[in-house]
Image (cartoon, rainbow, N blue to C red; front, side, top):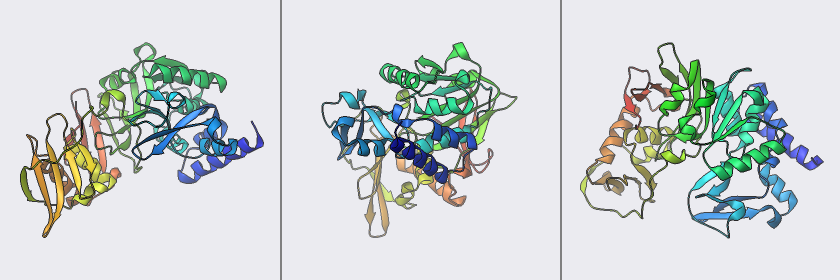
Length: 377
């Protein structure tokens, strides 16, 4: 490790500590784990509507190191194509990334695993978050599962280079990993639309699940759910406006280009700009979980690709007008929830919580007895 690398690592750890109030072990882990070992050859950066691969040999060593040790997420795979293998700029959706270190540290701080606990990490990725977790609680306590075989193989090499030896599994993390259950804590570095039942079934007594609940509007809430003696998971969301990539089985289905269709028209009862707020988009997503949220410049668009239903808004002389087409009245669903949220004071995500059982999964506002919405099965 060069003097420059050491300084950049210290600077990164300082920036992470400045951004979040962390338990000392996670700040120390960020300082100790060399992120450069997990981003070795190429990454993608946004380029117009697509992604441009940037190889280490294409930039100066100083620029490369500053990229690697920056507190930002670097996409490493788009639609299954690794950045190192891309022939040039491509379009598509990110399918793996090197998550920004402050998000890794913040998630682990919220999860708060203890020494001696058995922890399942869902989503090994490059292996960086795995290494940070191992530094905090010991590699012998960590099981990490990765869905993508190529990512899993690369992460295993990276972790070996870093001298880190957790138990690594290639498979579907949404199914947990029964062989090593029960787990005292499950920590997901991917977002989910609802909590997989296998996580609940493979959790030890009084265990916890830390994940981001997201959806097709890409509004996410970080939550730590704890298991009580009755087998019920519950918790409140954190304030953080953060997200991870959706787990691949929970991703939006492929679809074509959106075209506006005329339909039922009425004035809106709320300002569509509410969906520009993180918590506003989150509550709209709860109410219309099968819809995507698109931005067209004129106003938000809700589009359900399964049924073809859509709702699009536009300014009018008296405020805003919404056009709804298809079997689902998407704006009615979202607007009812937004108005409920406003009546309760428009809280940030800390105003929401969740109760999870094998029978139903509910996100509630204010308290478990307050307004609530079911997560998609």
